[in-house]
Length: 306
Image 1 (cartoon, rainbow, N blue to C red):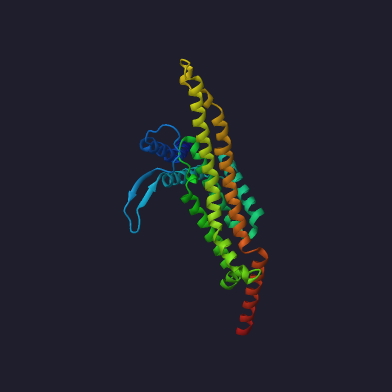
Image 2: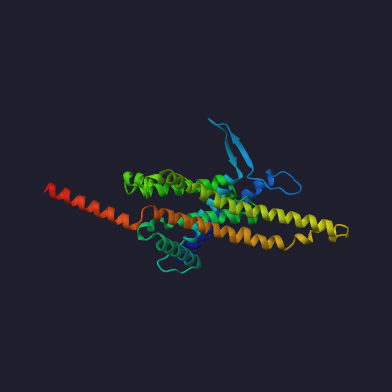
C-alpha cells in the first residue's frame, strides 16, 4: 500500500508539474516571440500588434498577429489554471486550490443569479470565462506582452458574440415579437431602434478597447517624457546621468491604475454589460407569459386529441 500511495503521489505531482508548465510555457513563448520580432527603436514607440505572418487567402490576406497569438496563449494559461485548481477534487475540500476553485464558482454563480436570475444560471460559466480572459489579457502587459484587449479586432469579436447571444435570446420570444420590438413605442422610432440594436457590439468593443489602449498610450508617453527629462536635467552628471532617475516610481504607480485596476475594472464592466443585455433582451415576465401560453396550447391540443 505504501508503494502504491507513493506511486499515486508521484503521478499527482507529475500532473501538477505538467499543468503548471501549461500555464507558464505559452506566455514564455510569447515573450520569446516578442523579443525576436520587435525591431530596435528610439523614442516613443506606440504601435499596434506586430504581424508575425501573412498567408494568402481568397479576398484578402490572412494575418497572424501578436494579439491572436497572445490570445491563444492566455486561453491555454486559463485552461492550465482551471485544470490545476480542479485537479484532485474531493467531496470535502481538503486543499487550498479546491477552496479557491469553489470560491470562484460560488462568486460567479452568485453574480449571475443577482443580475440575470435563475433562468440564466447556465451563463455563469460564460461570465467566468469572459472575466478571466479579459482580465488576463489586460494584465499580460505587465510581463511585457501586447495586451490583446488593446486590439479592437479582439474586443469586437467578443462583442459580436454577445450580440449573437442577445439576438438569440430575443428570438426565443418569437420572430414576430422580435420584429415588433423595433416599432416600440411607436413605429416612427423604428430607424432609431435599428441603430440602437446594431450599435451594441460597436459600443461594447470600442469601450473596452479604448480604455485599455488609452491607458497604455498615456503610460508610454509619461514614461518616455520622464526619461527624457532625466537626461536633460541630470545628463551632465557622471554615472547618475546615465540612470533615468525621474522615470523611476511614477510609471509604476500609473501602471497600477492603468494596467491593473483599469484592466480588472473593464473585465468586470464587460461581463456586467453582457449579463444585463442578455437578461434584458427577454425579461422574466415576458418569458413566463410565453411559457403559460405554450402550456395552455399544449393542454388544448391534448384535450382535442382526447
